Image 1 (cartoon, helix red, strand yellow):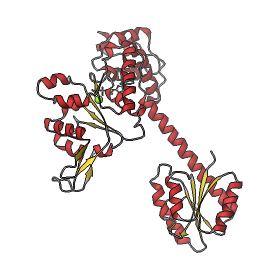
Image 2 (cartoon, rainbow, N blue to C red):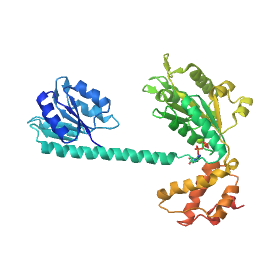
Image 3 (tube, rainbow, N blue to C red):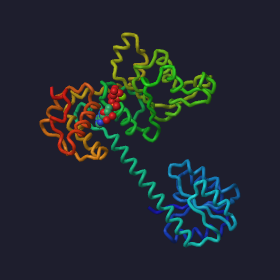
Image 4 (cartoon, protein in one colour):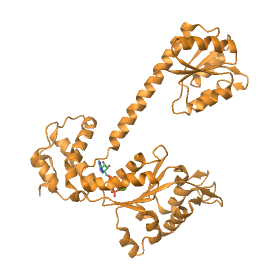
Length: 388
Ligand SMILES: Nc1ncnc2c1ncn2[C@@H]1O[C@H](COP(=O)(O)OP(=O)(O)OP(=O)(O)O)[C@@H](O)[C@H]1O
Ligand SMILES: [Mg+2]
């Protein structure tokens, strides 16, 4: 990759000289005579490396150090300092400058510094790439059977349209995995995916978790806090284990969904948000509605689309691929080199009921891998309940 270097200097001569030198060395060069222009290039993330003069007509160059630190690409900054600016240069290095070069600039010294900055840029890019690949590996969703393909196709269509989706299915069938996949393949993939497990948060705290609170709204609320609804703006809010929500909270969530706005606890101002809602439950919601434990109106509000993931025993043709996927995923993590499963063991695995569904399968494979120690998973490595 050819690095783009942003040169910020108010002296036209310096810009021309250094600029044409850098271009002759094959870099792309952007020029800025003041901080304002520099900030425009920086916030558009056009610069890979920044060459920065200290005193500029509209401010102090090193101020950019803290501003660029917030950016995802964090371009390395090389300060151009005048003779005698040593204190400033030391300060700039402490604040994260990549290097400093004294005027008058020696091109050889400049080239060295830029090459090192380029190494950093390349390394960061590689690291990002690696992280992304790793995330994707962890996020892989295995789908082979017709039943699962059908669920996935529906999910794909809904993901593009920002409709509310209710994901149901027994424990361990992959509701959370599917919710995350919907985020990845939808139009909101570059916006936040915020999940909250309603069963893990006390109902009294759920309101302030979701909607936020003002300072002093209740004991312990020292500072104003944004709620997850606000954090998820333009993205997705995943309400997991929705059946655990108290009736009071169900009413508040319903109102927020209908009005597309809500108030922080202790505030009178409405906050408007654009959030796609996904919800999941492993409980039979219609049954809970009958018992008066879940609001029917909220149920219908959430299930504009209902994705019902079948239990694993209903799509056993996915089992070999899932098992293979877990082996492949675990091998590097466990420092093993397990090759596969014997046909006899696979037969047992396919005929088992899997009450804990895919999560249980994952755990059984992991356990078998510990016991089989590098060979092939066989019947004797499987837990007793499968052998009965
Ligand atoms: N289609 C799939 N492909 C690969 N792995 C899967 C798939 N579905 C589920 N898993 C695995 O099973 C585990 C459990 O899935 P998940 O947490 O999504 O279940 P759940 O339906 O939310 O269960 P619960 O109702 O208990 O919360 C996941 O961590 C993942 O390892
Ligand atoms: Mg879950």
